[in-house]
Image 1 (cartoon, rainbow, N blue to C red):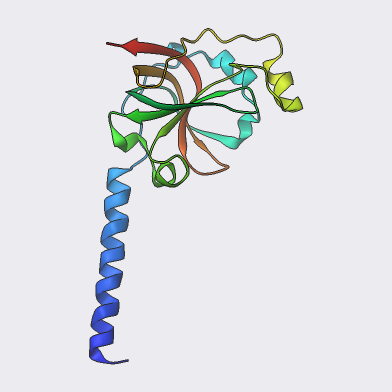
Image 2 (image 1 turned 90 degrees about the vertical axis):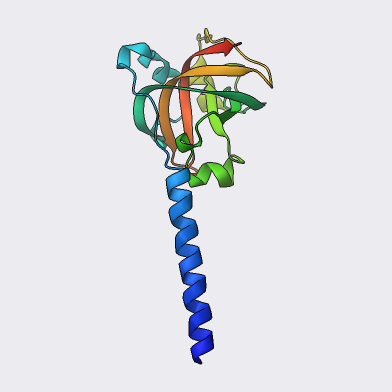
Amino acid sequence: MSRRSKQIMLAIVLIVAALAIFLKLRYAGKALVRLPAESCNADLWKHVYQPDRLRVIEACTSVEGRVASMHRAADGDLHIGLDPDHKSILNVFNLVHAQGKLVVEVVCEHAPKKDAARIACEGFTPQVTVPTVGDRISVYGAYVTDRDDGSNEIHPVTRIGILH
């Protein structure tokens, strides 16, 4: 390998390393606020479909941002794509799998299509304000990593407040 090729390879390695450090710092995947556990409804976990797929980072936190999207999932949950005010709550997987948004999940918001999810939602109706796209909101709930795709979420959501 020529000296020029080695210099180019070293430059590429340094650029990749700098990019990785930047992404790790910018998208640290850390909750900004740790709330007392009683500020969130722990009973909601009984209605989470396959709760073992979620790794709890903070049992209770809050985050503010603007609603970018909403999607009704087959498991009965309402997925809200939140553009958070502070990007440090996101991790790199949020950039890849959630288009740079924080997924906020209201459990059992509608009738599930999956049989196993029907059992989790049976007899339960969430008491959460459902926002609309464009609303600025505050969200309270558990801050977790979804082991299926590695992205961070607020799941389950205890409450949503519409900000003015």
